Length: 155
Image (cartoon, rainbow, N blue to C red; front, side):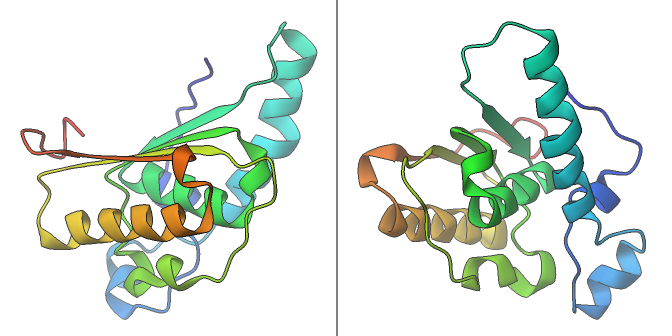
């Protein structure tokens, strides 16, 4: 397991936004592609060179990390075999990620989506991500759970 800590997750985990409020509240955003490139070219490469692995790669992200995991799932699908996406901040850029046209190449990844009691926007967008992904992938590879007892710190 590799855990990556960073200094500015708002910068690393978000793609460019057209939403004025997003830009004002998160002025350092829009560099997720740089972080994805870092994962692909440096982290994954280093792990394979340094450690004995079974070649299974799972990405887990929560909140803005869930937004990043969703972006990677939709734009760089084959980078990971499994995705655990928890309470993704899909509200980012007026929910634009959910309107992306995408196709998944085989083999299909396994996708686990969970959301806690976060309010109507977070809950609705996580559910939409599940249904959209479920329609695009082999349905046996997509899982969803609503964690009714969990809050933002838990899920």
